[in-house]
Amino acid sequence: MNQEIKGQFPNNIELFLKREDLLHPIISGNKFRKLKYNIQEAQRLGHTTWLTFGGAFSNHILAVAGAGAEFGCKTIGIIRGEELERKIAENPTLAKAQELGMQFHFVSRTAYRDKESSSFISYLQEKWGPFYLIPEGGTNDLAIKGCEEILTSEDKSFFTHIACAVGTGGTISGLINSSTEKQQLIGFSSLKGAFLSDVIRNFVEKTNWNINDSYHFGGYGKVNDELIQFLNSFYSQTAIPLDPVYTGKMVFGILDLIEKGYFPPNAKILMIHTGGLQGIKGMNFALKNKNKETIVYDEN
Image 1 (cartoon, rainbow, N blue to C red):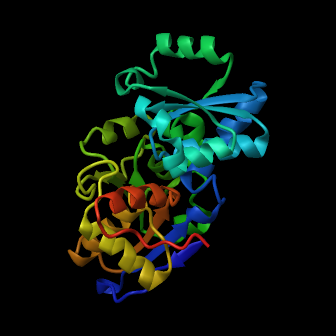
Image 2 (image 1 turned 120 degrees about the vertical axis):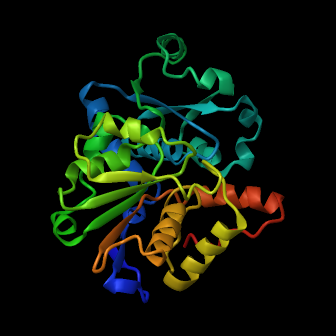
């Protein structure tokens, strides 16, 4: 569903948000798209155990746990940070994933950096037996195939610009592949650094895109008072919740660029809401501990 964002935008600009967050209550947004064909491949290969990787408040970890519960498959999460093993009950993401049946294996941050090495994968196979491996964040060729289905034929003919948040690069790669040459795509990096463009080039051939790294608010998972106030103001005005790690930063960036005259007259902009609202609980937990303003969000 594309929801128009009402406002007095200059130069006859029109702004819409594709509500991918409404696809599924747990397997939300781009995670639904990324897992679709991976699940089909796991089933084709006869795997009933899926293993993947993630951090403390990973949307991907929870989505895999939810999908495993829905399809009757065992799920294993390799979690970054050994200290989290003692804090599952305090962590809404891990607690929910565990409730959905996911088993955890906690590793140090040093070991986690080598998670894709053949020796570490062999170790995991010895410990857990055969499994279907889903990469961190879910991004692989099958995930990109799923993300290519985000844009409808109407989206391709109506919108001049497509925007989405970027983490591992899978979602925007799918959007680029399915876009038309006349459309411009902007990825808003949730991470510091300009390396994402090189990652995305491995999956796409088109050149109608760019990565904006000016709105990461300090880096992955980082927020400040300005961003929190923006999320709450946007929610108050539109009744649309935005997560603070991905989509919230992208929407902030788009509105700021509109104000600065970045877009041409009559631009029709489609922002992709990639879900991730479950992360609000964890962020609010951290904000409360710092006596900071929290994110207003009514789950019901």
